[in-house]
Length: 249
Length: 247
Image (cartoon, rainbow over all chains, first blue to last red; front, side):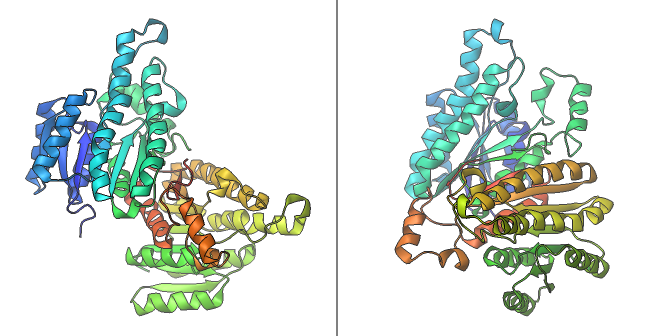
């Protein structure tokens, strides 16, 4: 028996990168997936990838910073599958500016997406998890939450906020058997670091990581599947760092 | 031995038995190290009846020459050790600090921290040479919160976290991962025997998820960290405590 058989999982930002790897990993374990992404073409491609190997998935345009859009994501999930078991808050944005020059608009956009978006998606899914007295919420943070980010103060703040939010939500939902946890990648081989670093810089960082390489998106799929499965059922409020030992916490 | 080989130090204890059953189910050949010979033989019989490959060695936790011999013997027999799980240890002695005899304080540090160190030493070289292996140590929620009368126990369990991070850094270049689990209140007979039933229920209610962990739930965390799914996780401590404390 696959470990996520008959589970319905929503993964935000699953059109690419880490979200995509987590969605594919959960699909391999038998979950039906909702691929929620701003980029519909990417979401559709991931849906196709899952279906080609016999899995079940739907693709949804979703803007997690917009309450209407988030409600639409939950409604569409319930219409299609009748329930939801797992929410993975993965979607996020990562523009860079020094604080001195940071426009309020950019600050608001990062917080609204990364932190408020995590709140909105969690809030929307909670009544349905309550109703079945089970469920998993898994959110993605970043090593930047621990170490700060040069020219990414808004990003670091939003990602640290996700940890505090998740611990609090874990306390609220624990009596209902619903777990809330966080996964923390290190630098990962996705589009994100390429926004502000050269290929050489990115791979040079791998040399400084104890396990000797930067992360691959697939490195995050195992921890996500574990937390979503029965095996992770007594773990809540925790942050699992899957970062090659880059930060030990 | 063809199968993956796991050495479980403390494998006959309350959590240990759940861990060896889980690992045997995942296909490991198991070496149980434990000082409790009766419990050791019992779990060994159970495993063998289920067709699992298992061995038991009676060991004293802080007897360095004996542990060296046992690890050497295991390596000779199997050629490799894929996984070391250090579960042995415990609170042993609880006293207010002004009444804590040095000998007992040191004993607590030794059975928890030194035993972990000695067993890690037993597998580091062969794991390094094979460029593969996983070590899982056991910390505790008390490492973070401390506890009345537990100055020694809490210190030893906090030390295991720092020891684990340091060893992870040393071993990572050689393809060996080192992590810790930190169980909270766990429903083993040893722990439960300290409370009457209303006390035990009350304790469970004080935990956000409303109950103690089952040993099998700690075993799942061990199995996860041992698996390839955790292939990019090293130097970390995984708390399994129903939300009792957060890392």
